[in-house]
Length: 322
Image (tube, rainbow, N blue to C red; front, side, top):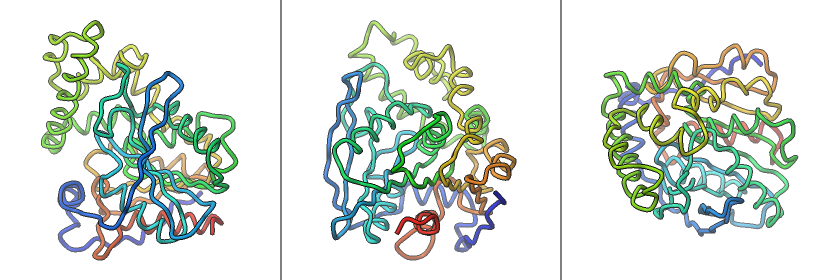
């Protein structure tokens, strides 16, 4: 499918990618979304929490929203999507991955970029307990990679899934990791590492046989974190094996659900490999939009809704969900 020509025009100050990223992560607020929490039990007896918000009237349309690294269902980029879709006749469920809802999960494992078994469990639960006939998936960053991997690694997916939107996606995890370790991203790198290591210290107290304090103290970089914890806790040999197996780039050719990827060209988290031009041109169901500006999950517009939120709704309507 030809590359989609972006229509995003960033406001003056938001032409700077770092301004877009930081403002959207630390300053933006979304009001008026009332969420109801549902806890579901996963096949391995762990749990995760789903935060639901609803359209004004009964609907058979649902959007499932997936957050990024160290995110949760109350982040503005999550509630911004929920609010816009609620106002346009969709129920919304904002997912909290394992350990991300304010309470540590039970297992030593948690969540990661390729944990599609958890997305599958969420979908199975919704399809078994609800009556939605049209489901849209919307993932951000890590959640976008998970979404794309899910759609492309399976021969069949539920018929109810009609469209997907992935925003600011590190399609090549190793490439993105290398970008995050560069000087331009030092503030983001240190912030992510701080939160991840602090959560790991709490987890270690409950799982002392699985992880030593010395191992935690050896973590100096995000790659170290993936070597010490992410890979070992989730069945990979090391960080590079995790990146290789879970990068969504390799699964894009097999996606047969209408899917829109929005990756800003000035996203400092993304390497050149994270812009899958060749894959989009060769797959009629894969649409790639590369706005010049937007940073990482920072497609600011003056008004209530961000560009990526409006584009998500437009894309869904274009693909026949009304």
